Image 1 (cartoon, rainbow, N blue to C red):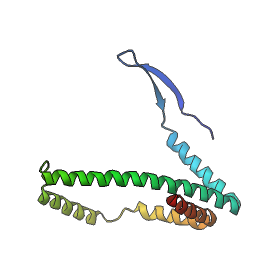
Image 2: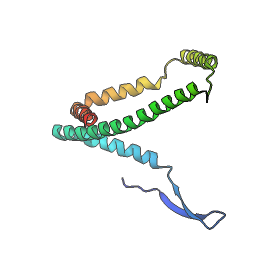
Image 3: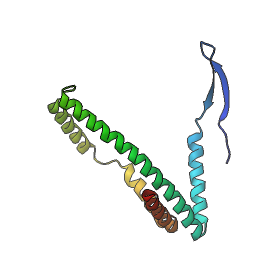
Image 4: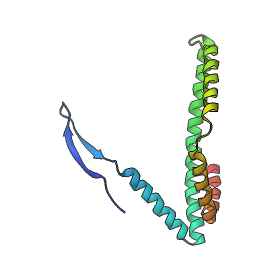
Length: 150
């Protein structure tokens, strides 16, 4: 299971700089096999092991979501405030008729395309995993909520 990427090659650019080129084509397949083996490990484990792994992974996910969410919310909110101030001071001028026209076009395009057929398949897989691994799912949910609160 510990397959490595192909050895790196040393190359030189036009100057005196040396750099390494890594071949990472198989990393996606390796990550997928790692997730499948982890899923198998959790599924075959005892209930207490499933609760513990689910709780810890949920806490880490919730904590990271809280930290990243705060950062993203601050960045987006700050940007919107700065744009509104710039608009109010006259630094920028927004063509609202063009914005509305583009939004109408996007709405029509979404209505024509309908929903993506891959989303129901993915939701069915998630539902099957949650039902099959109930203890892990409960542990993950509880850990996620604790991670959000901490």
